[in-house]
Length: 335
Image (cartoon, rainbow, N blue to C red; front, top):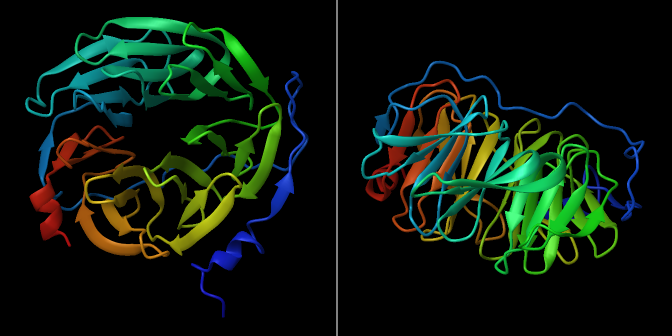
């Protein structure tokens, strides 16, 4: 029997390669088979979590801002962003958002981006000062390039690129939804949850598509140019590279993999498993994911992030059970 981690799965079976026909005009969306987007499995009661746990609101997105190390936590309603100093996690600055946020992303140094309907919100991580960049559509995902340009994806499946001043430079349609954006070098890849697919975005049109398991939910990149996708419904972790889009690794992850984070210090990808209330660390360097750590979390670990300055792993509960910090030494004990 062919092992599930085989690179050959990029060429046959569920990962079917197709050429999309989306273009730079507006339309009513493609007539293609879709599914309801996969969601995190409901967690059972939690055992004793590793590390330390601090009070926090129910959270659906968590980000460690690179230059300051401050944490940004978006509540499950999307209406409040909490800015948290890991050195004093019980004292958070709260920012009331003018529109319900969907996801978080790194902005300019010291800035957190919030994807929200008809706009991208820019929040100063230290002061909480907020500005807006207007964007047409229900924005679900955003990525900033080093030159300040933004790549934005909407719930309607449109991808837009904006200059630093907010001017739209190109618009690509043809997806059903654009739920996560992965930029590796000059390549843009989008996760479409409703098609459970990753799709390359070309200069003027959509490019190649690869099916992403049975129900993909989240995607991140790492410094090696890999695109890491959680197939929550299928219980797998999928690893791609772009230019051209190729599936490189595919391996099972038990207990409903959902949230993702990458630790560049240890070169591990972390994935939360909501059915077991755990975070699991994988080494991808051998060509197939190797589990190196498994740690207990608080209940419903729907959001995780790594402070790149310290290597500390943070986990937020979507059930309102707090914010968990797992330090590097604690992680070593879990290996």
